[in-house]
Length: 245
Image (cartoon, rainbow, N blue to C red):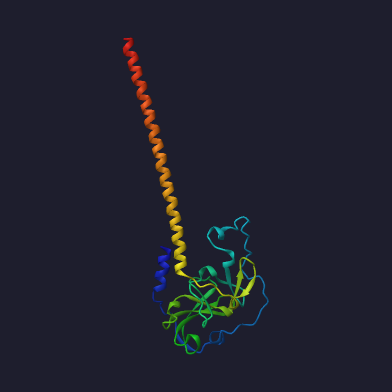
């Protein structure tokens, strides 16, 4: 039901709440320019990931996730946690240079004003700007309307790679998102894995059902043998009493 509700919200027409503003994109939106370099420190809000052999550290492994595929997305300006790689939902666009997520943290603020791009990659597209709640840095956008080439991104959260730092859970290293390539998501691959899991569950259920049937048969046989032995005992006792009389 939760997945169905997410899909329904995805295809619902967003309501315009605020003013429609035609503006020229700023330096970040126009050229995806990189903000000034900062020293790599431990991201705010990030805690070291426990190793798989530590207590509770195998949670991701039990969920079928590998640590090398997991990363946190942090604001370049203040290290606030904006999202993670588990919520990536679209292939990277080489022109936009954004990370597309279907869910972000509360530190991402959606601006009320609807903007329309007049140049650059978002020319002719209507979008809402995304800002970091902590430092106010513009970290991305959410498309309201777009041409056919970008319509699949409508309603999703697009985070600028040049405004994001990635904290890798496996190595505990901080790497600029612009230097990382996230693998393209394949629905066919996910469906194949889901099918394998369903087949495995079905096989286990069949084995359990077969085992239960065998146990029931054994119980029935034992009951019949006990009933037969009691019947034989009654007949012998009846014969002895009759002969004594």
